[in-house]
Image (cartoon, rainbow, N blue to C red; front, side, top):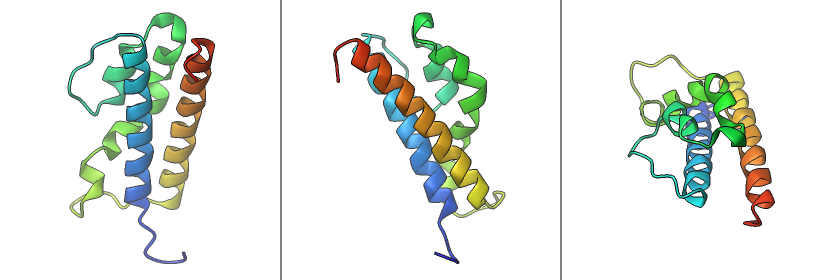
Length: 107
């Protein structure tokens, strides 16, 4: 795809991946969470021993892609670099959470 690449949608789906993995992990730990798309809020609810709270600063940017970036508007245009960065961050989080779930015998 050389033109019209939907980078904003790629970023959105990376955010959704991160959000759903964190929420799934919280559920596996019987941790209630508020209705939110905030990666920061959700990560701060994770048990300290999980190590997920250390990712708050690194992953907070993903929150910006939750809703606003899906729709056209007065936003900075997202680039290939933004999309690659978002996917990489979501992949790191996914791997961490899958390892934590595996240790609990849930995968």
